[in-house]
Length: 96
Image (tube, rainbow, N blue to C red; front, side):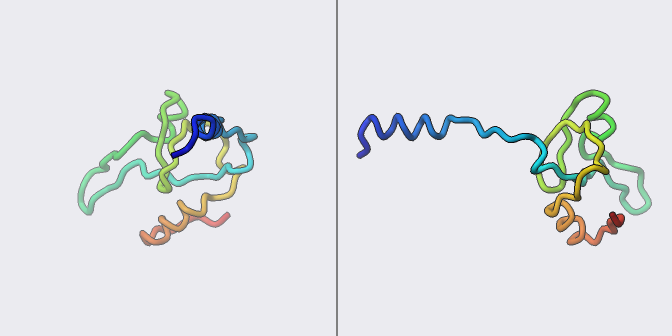
């Protein structure tokens, strides 16, 4: 059994928040806003990116990241996980 001082140290280390500069892990993400079944109408599945920007509501990317959109996605590279998922689903992705 660990002594009280060891437990205190572990708890303190685990409670220190991770701080990043906000730019080194930025990617453009792919968000599935809905789908159109064959011969059917568009079916929304979650918040849209435009709605997220206007209403400051979070959206969810294919990779699972949840965030409130607000930056120009053209400034960042495509998320490799989103890209891999989209390609595995047979989706065509734009170049660039």
